[in-house]
Length: 154
Image 1 (cartoon, helix red, strand yellow):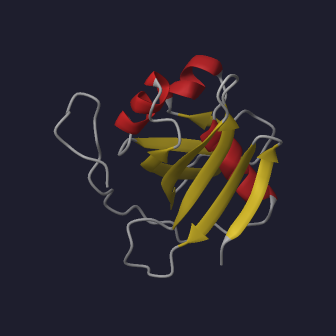
Image 2: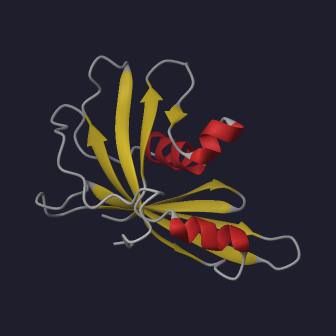
């Protein structure tokens, strides 16, 4: 079942769980943002989402993989975002009031990111992502590393 919602006035999410357990991901998270000061744009990023075992971490752990980027490819930032297709980030969301963590560049530089915000909104809205009890690591599909320019987005 498709779950949709808003993060704030300019951003929204949609989550579609996988119906087939042989799929690499538990589901697909689509984040949409209205951006641009001079030229308004709607930017859309799509991520594969998989819950991982928490291994002693007091909360939930997710792997997300950027699968697609669209909406601002005519800008330098948009072209850089497209180059990040295939990168995998780990998102840790604690059960207590301690801060969440993501391995993306945005979180490392600004201390917050859309990946955490999107997953938090899914969880707050009661959307079931994977099964935290049965979370089993699965092989991650082709991962694009920044140093390997030959690989392509999937």
